[in-house]
Image (tube, rainbow, N blue to C red):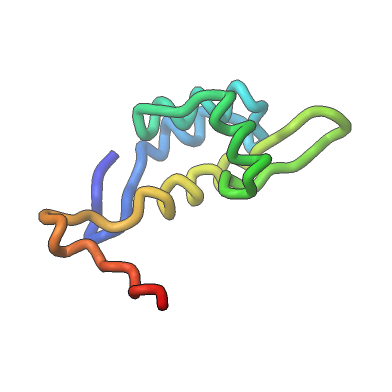
Length: 94
């Protein structure tokens, strides 16, 4: 994983070694290889909470589009910071 400006880039050969539609196990494995963490249970919890990568249901089976999963990871990693003072503060709630 490298950063180009504020965009995260991953090993494209690794990504393309996976099929276009990933099982839950393949998705968690790819996520672990790309960012160093990721578990099937986390994917399940994120699906329930609506905060995970986009997915498809094929009957009872869950499938993740490989490219959508990678883009989701890029967005979640966000931009890099050198100091906590650079991190944008949330506006105060009244």
